[in-house]
Image (tube, rainbow, N blue to C red; front, side):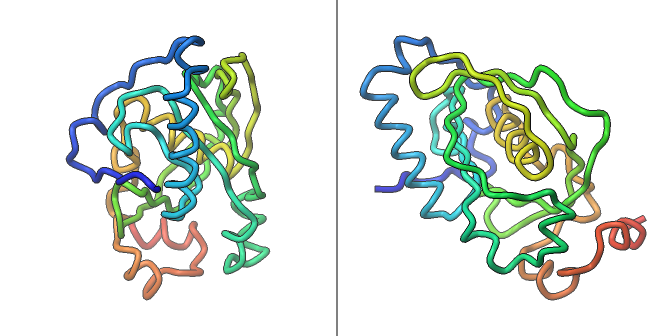
Amino acid sequence: MPATIVQAGHPVLRHCARPLSPEEILNAEIQNLIEEMRETMRSAPGVGLAAPQIGLSLQLAVIEDRAEYHKEISSDQMSDRERKSVPFQVLINPAIVDRSEEQKVFFEGCLSLTGFCALVPRSRNVRLRYLDQHGLPQSLEATGWHARIIQHELDHLEGGLYIDRMLSRSFTTLENLSQHWKGEPIQHLLEKLK
């Protein structure tokens, strides 16, 4: 059964989450939590979920960008966002060890800020170290939308939300985004918002 996703204003979203030990990762409680988070993320639906979003101050996030989420996105937008399917990933005690100076700006939403989104600048590339669901050390390099998802989820683990990084004049409801701004090139929107 999916967990309840806490909304902005809940204190757990504004605190740095605690790391998990390799022993904790392997116990049934954390393994069950990973499955609960996968189910919660998929039923939302979302492309990422951090433990603080379900009220648990733990350095644990799950990510998955399924092909079915791309059905209504044009090939030009997919290319511009450098967006591709990402298989299910578990990130425990993650740390970005390198990030590109080059940034990209796109709209982001959040399951803990239901119904809203804003333009958010993020590094185009990141290199990450983390533990997987078996407690084993891993590393990965991510580009484009995958890198954006990682940065968004890691913000949650540090007590941050996208609204801390957003271009504030772009903050909008999803309804207004769809009605007024959908399909407009980002550069055009940035010029309008000056």
